[in-house]
Image (cartoon, rainbow, N blue to C red):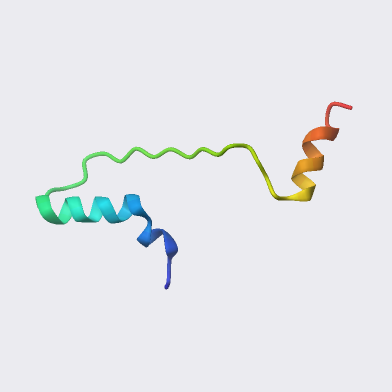
Length: 52
């Protein structure tokens, strides 16, 4: 598999919509978000030390 994002649900849905409508992409809007939880020990400790 060269790239995992090609199989992402959003990409797969966009491809199926484009193939069925025979249309063009006029605008793409994307968003990234996370819960703020990290599994990195460094990141967990770094956030707690900067104000002390």
